[in-house]
Length: 149
Image (tube, rainbow, N blue to C red; front, side, top):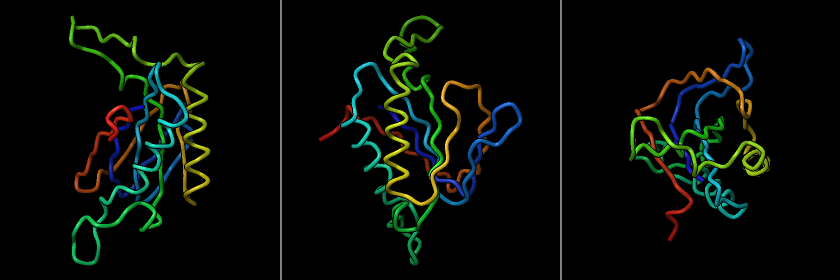
C-alpha cells in the first residue's frame, strides 16, 4: 500500500456536491492499494501513519503523533498512486489493485482506523471526489508498505 500523508488544519471531501468526510486538525491520507497488498500491509501502514511524530509539541518541534493530539484522519482512496510513468506519457496502472480487490483492504484500513481513533472520515471508494485541504506546514510524507524494515 502507498499513502501520501498530509498534515492539515482542515480537510474535506465532496462527491456530487455532498460532503462525505471532513476533519479539522489532523491528517489527510491518500491511500493506494497494489495487486500484492494484504491485511498485514494495511495494518503496518495504519500503525505508521497514526504514530508518525509530525505535529509540533510545546517547543515547536515535530514530536507529537496523530494519537497524541487526538487529531482527525481523513482517508481517501486513490489508485493513481500506483501510476507508472516510466514509459511513454500515459500512466500504466497495472500495479494498482482492481476496485473489487482493493475495496476490501481499503475498508479494513478504515475499520481499523476507527478502532484506534475517535475522528475518522472518508471519501467514497471509486467515486470522483473533490478534495479540499489546508496543508499545515506544509508537511507531506510519502509511505509505502513495501519499504518496511
